[in-house]
Image (spheres, one colour):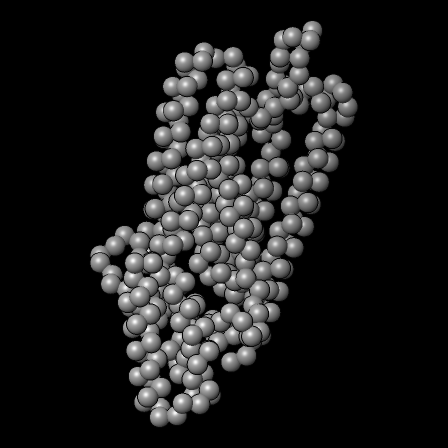
Length: 325
């Protein structure tokens, strides 16, 4: 019965500690009833029964006592993880931005602390609200599809130990990606004016040439925010699905295509750069040629990254689909 124990252990990983004992009891009862109904205690019968029950995660979660909820137990663990990460990173990113702004603009200390407190609270509330909204939408529109994908993509090979290993997402890698996405979201929305070339005059006076033309950049900001929110949503789905599947790889491909199209349009518009910076570049060299070369190089680098990432998604989805049944 080692396989049965591994099956139950795999299901209990997703259950709140307070309900594990009751869920385990129900899972053992269901399995015992199925085995008794077959009348054959062989290992092959055990395998057939467990295969018939489907994903241990879904079987375990069906045993939970579910009150009315905004976000159900199937998504709650992932939701809680992401809301903690996003709130923490949003607050830290905001505080870092305020500190840089304080140093650059030499504002009053009292104003700095008051502004930092206010923006940190605002960032935390905003992060909580947006993540909750995204998961509430997933709960109402996509949960059944997510559960069906988990169920259809599951087999005994997914149980830990002695089975053909699958290639899961790197949990740490996904979390790091979420952190950088949130930091970038905070940066472009609150502190894009601080992006620039800093230098000193006469060894004491600090000057800065902004990189971006804020008016033009602002016109692209809604599209940038939309892509970043989609990226966060995709990262959340990776923590739910846990490994590459063809639907996940397809969503990744679509997101990469949209990201590259947006990047292409932004880099086609040289007016996004601060005119003062463009003038100084032109004074030092052939400005337009340098800018075209730089922008085309950025396009080429990101095209390579997006293609490689999309290929890796489908490659790993194919490898994960080649498993024993």
